[in-house]
Length: 77
Image (cartoon, rainbow, N blue to C red; front, side, top):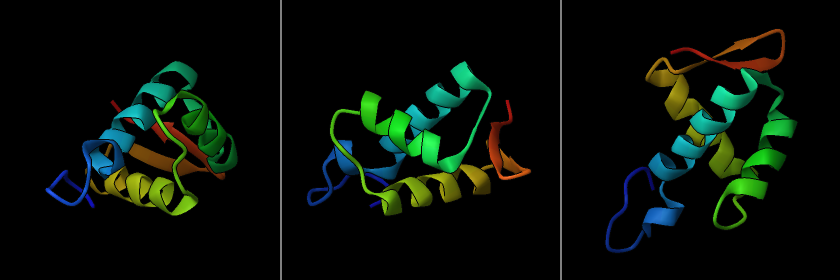
């Protein structure tokens, strides 16, 4: 699910979703999770689940690209 395979299409991979999250955060700098979920579903190719959003945020947190401050997600570049 993290990377595209024969079973997981590139559009469903967490790498692809994470790239869109980073682009949205670069524009807005900080945003709540609910607002981020709405923005990603507006801009992404297809509707994603909340679980996919959380998994993508976990991936970005592990690679030190986002942080959580006062219930707001901010980007770290």
